[in-house]
Image (cartoon, rainbow, N blue to C red; front, side, top):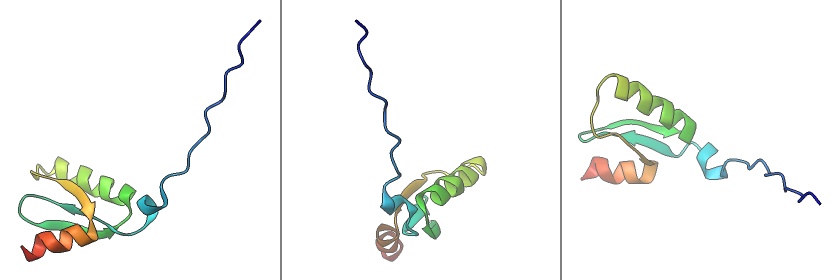
Length: 69
C-alpha cells in the first residue's frame, strides 16, 4: 500500500514583510528607509555591487535610533 504524502501548502509572506517599514543601513549611514522587505533586499544587492560594507536590513524604527546615535 502506498503511503499518501501531504502536499506542502504555499505560504503567504508575513504581512510585515510587505509593509513599508524596512531600512537598509551600513556601518556609517542609513542608505534607505520606508521600503518593503523585498525592496530592501534589492537595495542591499545594489549597495553590495557598489562594494558598500556592513549592510543590514532593519526596521525603520531601528534605523532611526541608529541615525540618532
